[in-house]
Image (cartoon, rainbow, N blue to C red; front, side):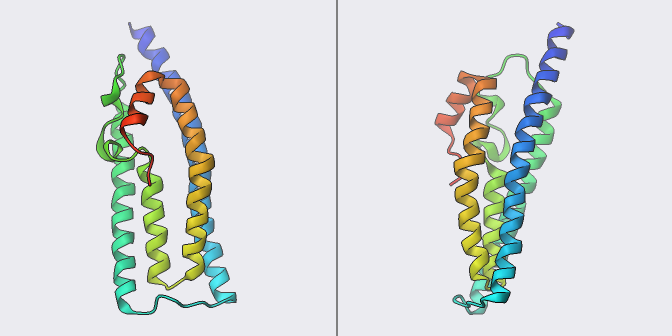
Amino acid sequence: MDKDNEELNKEKKHISGVVHVLLSYSYVIFFLAVVFGVIFDIIFPIRILNGIIYEYIGIGFIIIGSILIYWAQATSRATSKTIPTERDINFFLQGPYKYTRNPTNLGLTLTVFGLGLLINSFFTVVFMLITYIISKVIFIKKQDTILGERYGNVFQDYRKKVRDWL
């Protein structure tokens, strides 16, 4: 039995490592959306959302997005410490993962959008939308394929029950 748990731990760490590397690429793109958005706004200043109300809305999005990212990361850490030998859909339905399959990406989207509103950066918002599409089409799709191969029907049931992120 200990040998089975040891194999399961090795397998989970490998899959987790592959998924986390894949997701880190997605996170880098969100960072680049902010950097390029600010650079483009310096070069081509377009101000369409003037007003303090947009700054407050932006702060709200940043706070909500940050809380969601923290909650997702804390849930992932706690889940990685306990690995059940028999997995069912409840293995996935923990923390924010009950509501979205990709809470960190959703949190990053909200945070970057909020930053765009806060600093009235048209291009940050535009690049955030482009990043959302790239992340959804490339990284989330690839992650779902990897997890589907790893967890089989359990992940497919989870995928049917919970939406990806937007």
